[in-house]
Image 1 (tube, rainbow, N blue to C red):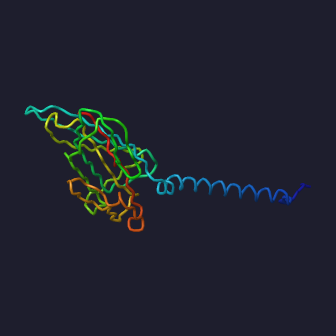
Image 2: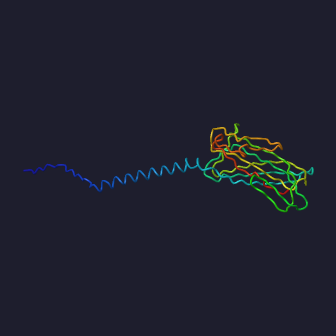
Image 3: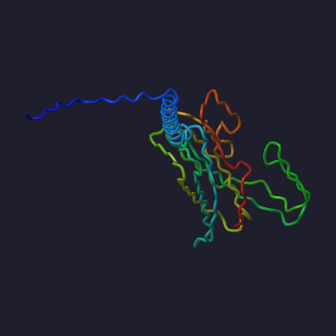
Length: 230
């Protein structure tokens, strides 16, 4: 007689303890928090932080002079700007004013107020009144023109201006410059370009900052002027 055995399925059910249940819940919650934090850090570093941290510019001015065949002197003012922050800057405008300056032959008591709150005094070769020899301005999109210029993080920009003067007419060339910028925007942010009585350029915003009228616009530069010997 053949032995017939009937098989049957056996199902084993393993019910986790309350401690194991909460351990799984905590592990899942920790994973979700870690993933959310990683996403936040990525968005913060790539999107939020660059829009909130203002750019910082390293600006260097070079002045070169070369004699011309007619006895005059050709002067080249070269300006190099680097954005050394993590945010992109949208340039609104740049002006470069150059002045010829001549000094007296004898030292004398010297008192000068080159800017508000700054007084220079002492015995030195006193400079005669300076004369404007070159005025240059560059306008970009924020002035309402068709040109748009964004300087990315780590990006560099260079501008140069050339002019001729009579040789030995001046001892130094003093350079004053100002650049206005904002975060990239489609808004027209006008810093208020002005032509002064001596022919030099200026931005209204350099005198009175009105962030309510010009949100997000800022200006940096050298208002006292750097003298360069000829």
